[in-house]
Length: 294
Length: 252
Image (cartoon, rainbow over all chains, first blue to last red):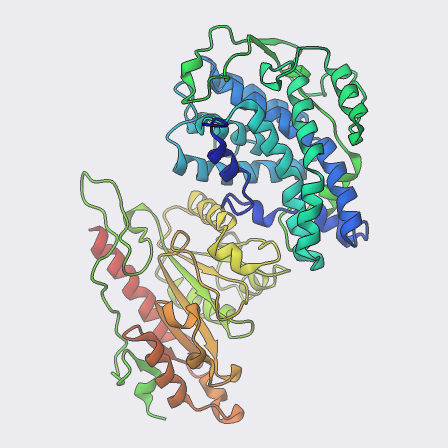
């Protein structure tokens, strides 16, 4: 096998996966309504901006979920991770949208895989977990590595609003597809940056300080923000390291490189946010007439 | 116009509305996992939940008026919920609430992501979530009506979303519509040709419409109705009740 779980990864990143993504625009409906995005060039700028914030955060959460699925204390660890997702999603409308999509993906994942791992059941996640948390667990179930989970989350942060914009503005689908492809290297950079933030062995690079790693990524020329956050987001769990040393690598169905992290400090997960996206989400949720749920 | 054309179940015009029994039905047996068969109508919720009836059809064909009529008639005797799939607004849900055919909490509107067709056939998640919410809130429910946003003749409901589906076309859309077919007209469990009272005004030939409908639908039933003449949508209401009986018989 070239890449473990690659077929599962492709299925999970497919826009046609019936998990509710169809009715969520990732903020682009409101951006279009307010005249911020009117054509393909504007769409590309919007997508890049969303990738750098939402994409980075969801990539970190999804990758952490994949790793934590293998932990002997997986149910408790994933509950903590879900709270971390709340803390990193200041807009209530975005929290609702993320949980709605998590609920949808959970339904699909339940039908596809019996359980994420031997230490975690789907019901442990609750009825409406955050989307990246479910995505990471589904990756674990499908034998996808944490790196794959980060890639899927980063990719979805771009693909969902791009197809919504295509429908709303009747954009040329070929041009929109070209934009997604052009963002490919940036998507990979973001996924790698999300993993490096907490020194995941899955990142394939030596562990180092998260801030400096983001700087390195930015130096690669992809406009990725280089700032180091002052601390964990308000509402996040106090800095603590989840001890994964008792993690049983065999707990996850396949994927030899999973469950290898000794410790995972959730406070180190990316917490970037974009006030524009938060405001767009809130204004959208307050509307009575809209085509998309978010 | 012969009255029996309003209720026909075959190309050769039976006067009674027939509910054909497919050769094989999804069913549950004691000690056996629920499973589906490929033939016949879609999933049957049976004892596991309310019967789910999809109502689709082109814009303006009278879907919401039919849903309102069914709510008025069936709401008297059944525990009922409605999911609407409006294209842009919550107009259909508002209409049902305003006309007080059901209490507000029994009606849920979902967004359809700029493509109502996809929301009932391809990514049905928003509708499934809405039904789950209704069931959670109002259990026990006997029946959930899922009204699609107005779409075209290719629109059909996923069998993962509804047990049976009704497709509504109207006389004013032209009497060629049944002949043109499309998955809605040909495969729906019930075809409703609506607004028959308009036929003389728009020059539509109801006999041609009924005949063409039966030609493309084989033995599947067709109802011709006018809600002006029959505000209780009697034939459709009877058909829905027959589906409920069938579900009960299958899951018994």
